[in-house]
Length: 277
Length: 111
Image (cartoon, rainbow over all chains, first blue to last red; front, side, top):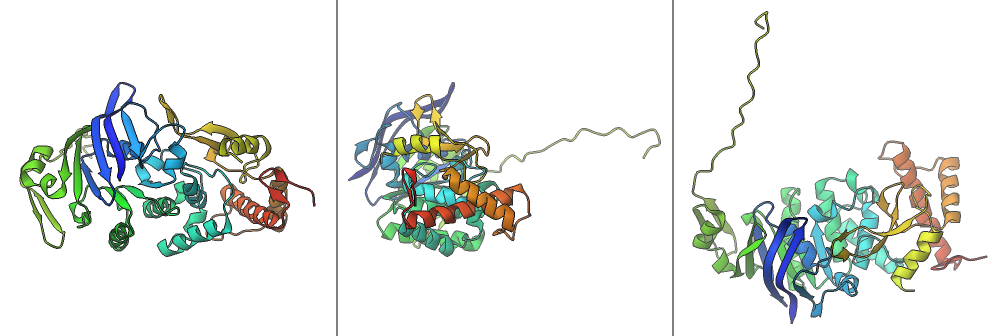
């Protein structure tokens, strides 16, 4: 079964093209890794593909149905989006409790009364993730790690078929990061397809079979992970000579061989005052 | 009840569980292609908010103010924590009233 199919998909904001002619197919039991530099359109791609950001330029089929304004809510309830970049544009004063409960409805806020079972399940996840206390507080008062955990719970409350993970480990300490990476492996074993965006090669585990490289809103290359994360392809993508070694246990050693130009700031010289001090 | 109809009715009837101000139904996520879905929103608090029945809000506010109720001992005592406390009591009262059958999707009924 094809879970997601994007054809000739573009996305513009004003006169700025954020995504251009994206063709992308995700099949069942496929896990994808998406790599791209800052501003390459990764968050936009995930928020549109998950149905959270409306668009009509090109076609999107999600879970076997064309994504339209009429079925968007229903389809959003079957996928999960974890993106602090996206949700922090809309959430500020909402408590994390309310944000998590909104996850049952596939949009930002609640659309109906929750059952006790739904509340108890969300609470159980909050306890497991260690945010039971902080979930009572508004989004703006929470740390980056608490937000990430809350948004992950929000995406998991309705057991999604696909999980879009936009830099889910950023802002987390090394222990929580390790726990999350293990959790993603567990979710994959539960049959959930993962689409994982990261800047860090040490977060890539051996559960990903496919990869896409995004550059300035365009797909540079996509396909089997081993072909995409190939030194030659990555060197072309980064415009830099890179070395990569994928070990048998799935760990990746990545190195940029070229010397990077350092950022230098020249502060304006201060004139000495008359006393010479 | 269909979701959009339910939200429309709640926007006319319910108030924000934090500040007690009226709610509006509107699109929060939208662009030139359309809106993502109707949401209930409190313009006063600037937050997405499902709301509570006004009678329940008045009870919760009275409870917090008269009994100096404070569930948020780890927070400074200010208007933010006061509103969070009122919201908490609103949640408890609404849950209890639903359990005894006084509160339904159509609002508060008579005992």
